[in-house]
Length: 388
Image (cartoon, rainbow, N blue to C red; front, top):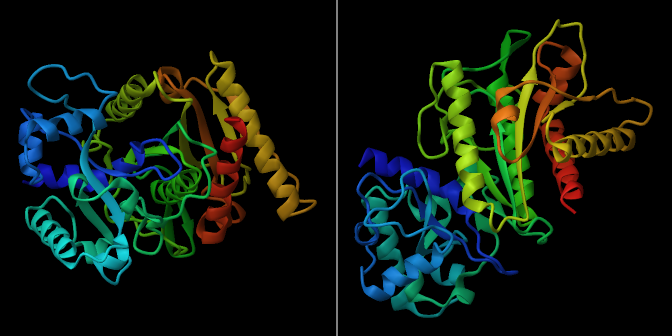
């Protein structure tokens, strides 16, 4: 049961990744199968009738996956015919805009059952997310906004779709380090600033903005405990893990290869349909405390699209600094560098260093929540411009 719980913790995020088309795109619960899982087993586990009609519905939702024999493919997510719907905090009927009390109670019992079985991390009243078996309601009845993404934390989990600017664009967001590797460490008075915590927070903020514009978003590193946080000093933990539930290795080379493997597998899965596939690696640099640096970018040396993406992001941040702080100047740069994530990743990739975590002025870019949000906003705007 423990591994199954982990797969469902991931599904709260993975449902971002699998939105279907349309202005009111519906979100479905998604899971990673366990060893020897087939469609029949999965449907039974989630208390869905394993009828031929339901099995056909499952494969219709997963038409981009090869059926391939008796068992489902390990390491890949599958959509279930279960809608994910925002719970408004009042009643199921007001959340779904229905009058049928019996149906509302049926949905309540279903959510209580899957929570009791360990398939949901918390109750729908706490997570603000209802699961509704698709056969119980027409899709248009539950295509409600805002969508709910618990990974962002209670304050930020509701996300409203602004437009479809990034429809069919797939973004693989890789916040640096995590797990046993905190990355660079700076000091601020008596406090320590950890690279992995600030990179993760800014990456979450970027993910949320991309979702607002209709993107498909994958967080390569995740943490169940840390949503978007507005504190200045972000406490450190080592609870991060990879998309898919794999623990982050103690070995540096293993960590890099694991990340690339995840990204490349997703790239292969979506290459036939995606309009764009982009990998963004977000890090924080460490240098002498006297050295102040602006956001700078590394691109893939053998990929002109990567270089142009880096240029676009640099121009956007430069323009934003000019608006926000006239006369400040911006000294960000783009260059290429032989980094494993850039060399081995199949999607167009850019590796971003956000600043020097040991420099007091650069630290303000990290410890002030509004500054972290501004960086995420500017990067999102740059990505929108780059995908036009």
